[in-house]
Length: 252
Image (cartoon, rainbow, N blue to C red):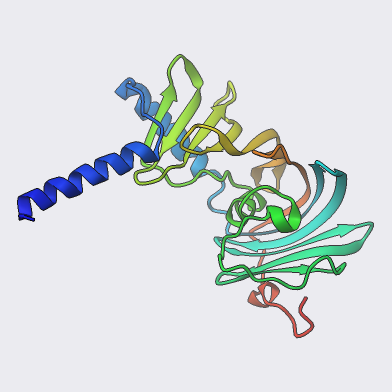
């Protein structure tokens, strides 16, 4: 194949792939696009100067089999280190440990053997029933908003409270629903058909030290699995030793 034909063929394949990977982008006002971009950048930057945290929270999980309430305690350090322990009536049930290179799930009840998935950013749902990836939960536990990287932003036509965020070569997009004061109300991760993989509803923010952080959230998956999270204590930028994110010889 001649070089010019090769280039044309590659361009055509790329155009077809991109067209099939993402939802169509509507024609919008460039001025409003800039405002949408600025709002999204501001939310992505929310509390980015918090680099570590410790805290506790109550988690209420609603599944097809019933409702279960847990207490959690965590230590986290940006961007990818965390130790979270789920307890019931003071007894540990599940621990998640991430040291930046691997993640391990430990059951304290014998529900499963210690497991290290291939991904260092696994889906938490199979183990903790919290329907997000680990990176999203770490972001929330740092008092931040899990807005992912984007290179395009626009308001949905006829709805200035909703911002759509896109990224080249990705079939996923995000939707931000804003409050009247421009704070975040809902964040959705959408597939290429526009269906939500998960939704995070932000019900309340609270002052913890010098920071305003989300303290009451509901995470809903596409399977209608719900995790209600209420943060009860939060210590930002507290020193956390590296050893916290390592398993002991006993595997805990």
